[in-house]
Image 1 (cartoon, rainbow, N blue to C red):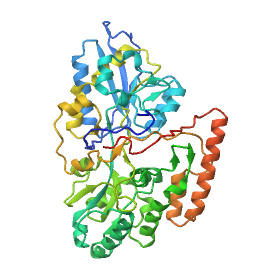
Image 2 (image 1 turned 90 degrees about the horizontal axis):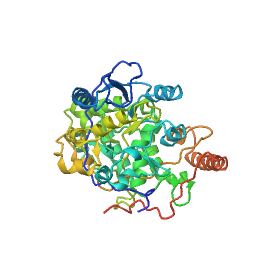
Image 3 (image 1 turned 60 degrees about the vertical axis):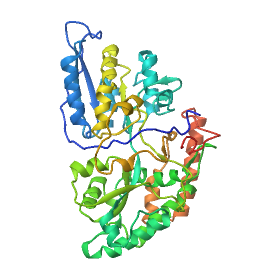
Length: 456
């Protein structure tokens, strides 16, 4: 299979229990890099993840107390401005020795900056076999120009989350299977829920990019559509039209929770937990969210996102972030020690409980063989089915507003949808052409791309 194509994950889902914590920063290490001297080898590890903090803190404590190489890990959780702090640290040659790869800073940019260390020299044949070649060579996710920069641990799947109580009140017995049903259900739930201030649909459009990552992109991809044509290497925003029109209809008939244009994801979750939202799209963290962050009495469930016509999927929903987890800094003075710690973090001793405690969707075969299935409510609904890892989008400079912001304006009737589509297609293709001519980006073309090529 083309490594740039779709990679199927034969994994089960683990969902996040959010734990809020924060640690102060400490000085950079200045000890010997061998990991075997009389002095401690102090390594810094930065992360922006809070959902797994309880487990990771416990595992790092165990490592610090038991490793035989005199290594000490300073673990720091960056609750805000992780990317900005990390970028500043990289530019000033003060980057942490190990840091979380799941972030907004682009993988390709980090490679160009010589900020992250290739791991090939450390990987044994046994370790490569354990993770699987396809999982280690996901182009522009953890693999670039013949080198591996990160190993997989977990990813996220996307589903329709729905309130069964509000469905029953509106006379609905099953989740919507088509876009038309999605719009119709939202209207019926809104009408039936007037007495309690409930609405049929919710969306977190304070951040359009995050909102559409959870909703518009899964809707397109389950139908085999995307705004980037992988076969030709060209943008075609006309592909978003039928899906955006569904959102516009729900907005126009006032079936969406009011104030959605300034609503963030946690306030949306709070409204759903309070029984005020009938449906919304989100990722596989939700069972953990409603187990601990927003405990709810609502009888809720999940379903695969609807197809455009209610028929079987022509594409595959996508699994986000399934190919990476940790980076080693290319500038660390302690590469052997850093790898020893990373090897521990990627061991079954860490990844099996990570799976069992519902922290993410495991993609590591040895973990899936050993671990017990998590028991969080609605966990099974997020298990991969008609899901795959899609190729990473081309990253390049774009003049003007991001496409998500323009599309959100069309939903709010600020700009006509057809004009938005026309302008975006022209602008994005022009910018990609210019960046390619200037040698700043390599266009991705997969002539035989098939979004269902590895779906069984």
